[in-house]
Image (cartoon, rainbow, N blue to C red):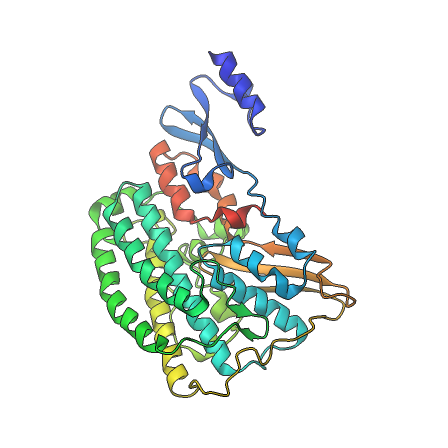
Length: 400
């Protein structure tokens, strides 16, 4: 039996460890996929000593998205539908980063109409809330809490309907275009969005009561998977993963792109309120607090869109969209904050084509997951599920 399992392991994806590396009492195990969406794209190679995880190696597979190669064969504006598919839970944010990067190469930064900029930030923050709802909801179900999952997915549905109403698509929007937007907000959007804010604020209090401050949840997540700040920085972690370790680093403030410098909001960080700074509880706490801050941002955007930058018949959201995109010869990198952290795009333009000679996406999930062996060694096997879930990965970003 043992030899058959050994042969089976060797035929699968290559492992870091061999059976001969094991000490007495240790086992080499595969964990995953945990969810149909992770089929073939994430497997954890474990060495366990009883219930203790001695070592863990994440193996990312192939989702066959080939984002970079697609981007190197299409014009900049034709790549937008592929950008959506990298992080399908936060497609608006990915589009926003891609468009801002190309616009900066073209020298369009700061020249777009303010109404376009505020609408972009508005839909990106709505998508940030939707993404965090999925992250916290699926995390709850990972550790056995089913009701919060249903409640959070119910609340996310309101956002999905708003974004579908705006873009015509439920998840892959292709709404933010280079130099503008596909279309202005639909008439009546502002009122319905305000209704959503009034509805959702009490739901965040419910979330705190039923999950974040729930004793069972705290017992399962506090002091578990602690990520020290120096380790987070050394591994290139970003987003809530980094901020939960105590560093107030948010690219919306650090780089001050789009209209974020004109908007007031706070940057929640982990403080170890119920456990150790940087543990699984802190990561969920930071995401929950960030949803409150996103509501502040959305409220301010709605105010500006109904006072200073009202809709008008002559407003053309595509007026600044360039008909020909041909950046001068240069290497260029642009980054911005998505729900999972720093998303960056590197371009190499030759100046002779509207297709990038080289394109590379720097995804936050890849760096965040790479720290898993550091924070999971020595934990219980049951806690490993809690740790992986707290990283909040989207596999479409991990493998391209």
